[in-house]
Image (cartoon, helix red, strand yellow):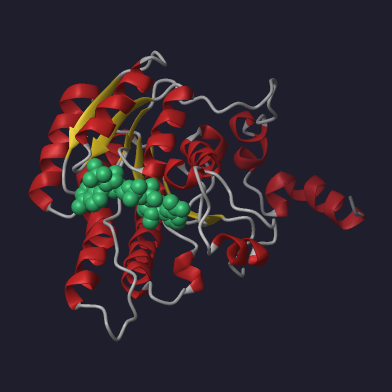
Length: 290
Ligand SMILES: NC(=O)c1ccc[n+]([C@@H]2O[C@H](COP(=O)([O-])OP(=O)(O)OC[C@H]3O[C@@H](n4cnc5c(N)ncnc54)[C@H](OP(=O)(O)O)[C@@H]3O)[C@@H](O)[C@H]2O)c1
């Protein structure tokens, strides 16, 4: 420490350094060194994963449950897949419930909220994962109905679900919102205009929300997968795979579990001071500039 800093401390105490004495000395702020190996522990938390019947959703839901969270498994039309997942999750010894709904329709989201509240109580971790199927088409060819459908499954989804579930987080002074975005939103691949527009809109909603609810200790982040290997793709690659892998700095595709790991981290207390982040999980394929 330089002589002038020591003199300022002697004359004016720690406040002379611009630190409130309480802030500098409060053990709750300073004694954070872990005494045991870090682990992701979500026991006592309740999560809702939209699109749990889908490829990534089922792995995210299973992973949160494996970390100890009670989980609401949401589906739209894939009831059988949701029920199969329910059996797997229940075997992990946590509470779970299956809820159906259209994430782009306000009435349906309100009904989902009532069903989750009745089965598991308030949600601590809201994972916005569902997305409607999209048609690969150029902007000049794609119908406005396709754009609207993607808008609703990304933007309306983010707005309606957070309006339904975040007020209870505000009341309790804690919560996590995690949007599943995509590397495509930064890459702007051809023929993905509708998909990219919806995800860019979701990004806008969630960044603003992060500012609006931060004071309540609610964090709002996004995980942006690359083109992941999941059950659907596990059996065989496609002809695009070698081209894709050539451009990825890690020279391979990642796995559904890589996405779920990032979600579990952001859901946990380990990530309590991280908000407003867009976290690519894509082997370096996109690198947001600071
Ligand atoms: N897979 C990848 O490589 C990849 C890459 C980048 C980003 N992502 C993102 O990761 C998320 C999951 O992708 P995925 O590949 O796992 O998708 P997926 O297998 O197609 O699953 C989509 C899920 O969304 C649900 N859904 C569709 N329309 C809905 C609606 N109107 N209301 C409620 N739920 C609806 C589906 O429910 P039902 O099946 O029950 O109808 C399904 O559970 C998406 O947000 C996607 O953009 C995925």
